[in-house]
Image (cartoon, rainbow, N blue to C red):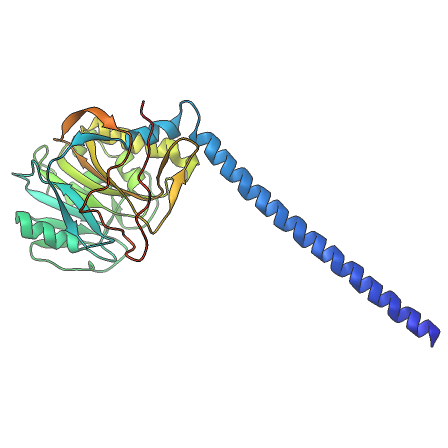
Length: 296
């Protein structure tokens, strides 16, 4: 009987020791995960606050450098709505709405205002979220020159050719692009001649917190600058959060209005300006804080 009790006691002690060991292992794993996340955050902050480099130059490229006196909102009252500058839109001949899966009131608002042909594009659906008079749907996505991403897809130059706008005059087109991250390569690989056919572009840029992609992102912004575009408006999408460095911050997902004919500002704005027409994408949450960007 005593030997049985001794065996039971040994078994109990073994289970207790094993339980303590499991707790130690669990705590070590949790600690390693936390250290890994902290290291990643530290690396991102360090990369983003280098004196010079792709990150700082990228953030600098989002500064508002063009003036606009008259904005108008096109699209949904919340997510899917974009501010367009109305100062010099007379004479536009066609428009593009790229990314029409979930909502596309923008297209109907545009054709109602300008009565021009509008081309809706999205390869992820068989038809746009909203049909509209004067609108024509193409089941194609927008891509860069390197194959990849959703298919079928066209480059920006191919898009104009396929929609009959290959010979469009310079600054005669305008558009909206919301394609969940594919915008970076599509714009970076677009040729300047094609981009110059557009007078104004509203683009939602995604995932600015991905620091390792900043050199590629910068290529897209530099290509837009080479094509003569100036940023006239910024608005953060509050379905995401902020990319916050030690010195600067910008929404991880940000809507940007570019205008090729905007009057250059004497001094670009380091801080985002919220406008009365701005509305939170997520109506149930407050707007994100304004972007704060490098001054030089």
